[in-house]
Image (cartoon, rainbow, N blue to C red; front, side, top):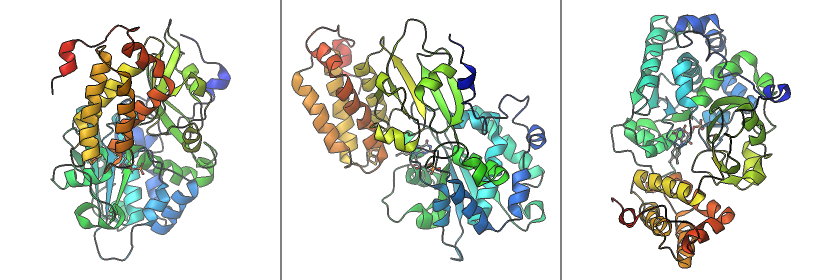
Length: 438
Ligand SMILES: Cc1cc2nc3c(=O)[nH]c(=O)nc-3n(C[C@H](O)[C@H](O)[C@H](O)COP(=O)(O)O)c2cc1C
Ligand code: SF4
């Protein structure tokens, strides 16, 4: 394991993660000792519109994958419309490789609760929900406990801290479907229906939960809000780049010495993150990686110095996504990795639209053929043609995301495919697996 140099260590900007290593960080007492709920007191004295403006000025962009400007989203909520407004926190975190929201809720759940109260006050919502993925039992337990503690201290409920503002907060566990992370499927699931995406427009800002104005934001987005309220927009913008402001939790996994979460200013590079993570495991050399989960096109060792912000990653041909960097070495096979991701997308496809439902089903079969040594050169054209019929033609982003690793692995690693087809690489799947279980 290599030790990071001091100048690289200085790239760490612990803001959202700053309490994680404190003893009992998840308890309200610890949270209050470490600035907790000070932002709420400050926010409740401000006009809600000024808070929306503050978040706009900070340049905060959604941490759920698409990077939509948060203040702008809050500003879309119609005011004085006589309808209930809702804040829904997306804590589904299902993107393969992503591990930033669950540790945040496990270690510092009160930062999310405080963010929820401030955001609800800003958009004039008196009811908020945190939709957490079903498997995340430990995080949900910590979160529910934090909500109870916040009620007991008068941070939630009626007339919060004597401000006249009321808020009820419900933690709802989903049933573990990746599609329920897509915001409109999440709303359907929360309403008790089968989680499938809704047609847009109308957008959740006007017709969201129970057909009322709703903001859906990621855990990291909402947990950033107390820091912006306390530190100010100008301080927030001292971190990151002009268009991608603030710190970001990058989760690193794969063939590295020290996997985990590293919070750095947006625009840090993979070369720097790898140094922070102690480098590659002995005997492994970087071959390919995802900048933001498996729905983002693969990058290679050529891209080690691409700044990991929304614009620069897009310019390099990929997507920043959830900043889940999964790192693969020269001992890993991009064809097999893509096949395993496709198995996931095929399994998680909700079946509502034909391109994604059928396309992923067939692509899994083509991969099985290639990996069992029975592929043909035409299979590569079939894969690209199928991706062409999924990308931009699917009902939601799941279909689009499924094509990312297929097209990018064919772009950078066509030789690896040809080695299976032309018999230079031994088959990875048996004939039995070729048929598959479903
Ligand atoms: C298939 C799919 C899964 C998604 N999963 C998540 C998720 O687990 N968590 C999340 O915050 N956003 C997820 N999103 C993005 C949400 O639809 C939405 O953009 C996000 O919650 C908005 O929050 P933000 O503006 O704070 O980023 C997913 C999108 C798609 C298409
Ligand atoms: S793209 Fe896939 S997940 Fe999305 S609606 Fe269509 S079938 Fe469902």
